[in-house]
Image (cartoon, rainbow, N blue to C red; front, side, top):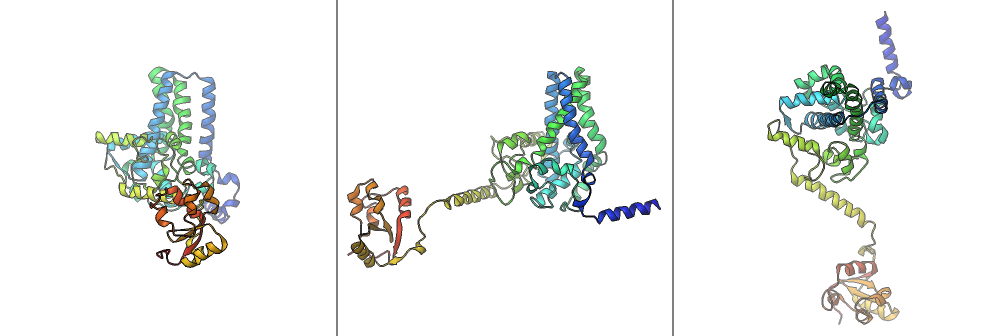
Length: 409
C-alpha cells in the first residue's frame, strides 16, 4: 500500500512543471553542501592553523596531481579519447581524479560529451548562454530538469573496467583521495595533521574546483575565437594559466580529438606536456593531432572574417554600380561646361577638387590631368603612386567611363 502511494506521489510530481517545483526540491543538496562548506572550512583552517612550508609544497603538488587527473585523465583521455594510456597511468588518473571530487569518470565524461555535442543550447549541461555564474557553479547547485541534458554515447566507458570500478566505488575513493590521503601524507610525513587536512585536502580542493570550473565559464567568455566563432568557446592565456592549459578552448572545441589544447610550444599547457612526457616512457601512446593543414584553414578563415568585419567599417567610396556612367566625350564636356576638377584613372572618374592643394607632387601636376585620362601618369608614367594614394582616390569616385579603353584625342 505504501509503495503504491509513493509511486502515485512520484507520478503526480513528475506532471508538475519543473520550474514551478519548490526551490528546495530543485537544489542539488550534496553539491551545495560540498561547495559551501569546503570554503568555510578552508578559511577557518587558515585563521587557526599555521602553514608549514612542507605542507604548502605538498598542497601545491597534490593540487597539480589532482588537476591533471581531471584535465589529462577525465577530459582528454576518457571524454575525448585523444590518446591512449597504459593501465598504471589509468589507475593513477582514476585515483587522483577522484581526489578532485568532481564526480566519477563516467558521470563527468557523460556530461562533458553532452556539452560538446550540444554546446550553447538548452541541452548543454553547463551552457554559457545561461550566464557566467550558471556555467561556473550554478549548474552544479541546481538539479537539471529531467531529460533536459542532451544525449551522449558512453557505451565505450561502460566497457572500460577502470571506469566501471571507479564509478562503483567513487564515493569511497573521493572521500579517501580527496580528504584522507592528503592529510595522511602530511601527518605521517612531518606531523602536520591539521595542516594536511585544512590545506592539502580542503583548501586545495576549493582552489581546484574553481580552477577547473573556469573551463566551463571563463573559457567561454574571455579571449579570442581563433578557429571558429559559431559557438562561445575562446582562447586566452589567463584561462590557460588557471586551468592547467585548458584555456585554449576555441581550439579544443574545434578539434576535440587533439590531445593538445595549445599548439604553440610557448603556450601554457602543462597537461599536454605531461601527456607528451609520459609517451617517452610508454605510459601514453597513440597521441592524436588534428592535421596542421586543417587547423591552419580555420585560422585563415577566421582571419579573413575579422578583416572583412574591419573592411565594413571603412569608406571604400561608392560602388561602381552606384555611379553615373559617361562616355569619354561626355566626361570632357562636363569638365568644360561646369569646371569640375575631374580626372579619369582606370576608367573611373574622380573629383580631386578638395585634394589639389594637398597633392604631394604639387598643384600643377594634378591640374594637368583634369579633363583627361591620367591612368598612365598615375600608374608610373609620371609617378607610380603608393597603395595609400590608390586607396584614397576610391573615396573621390563620381562616375564611370563607358569604355575604359577609349583614348583622349
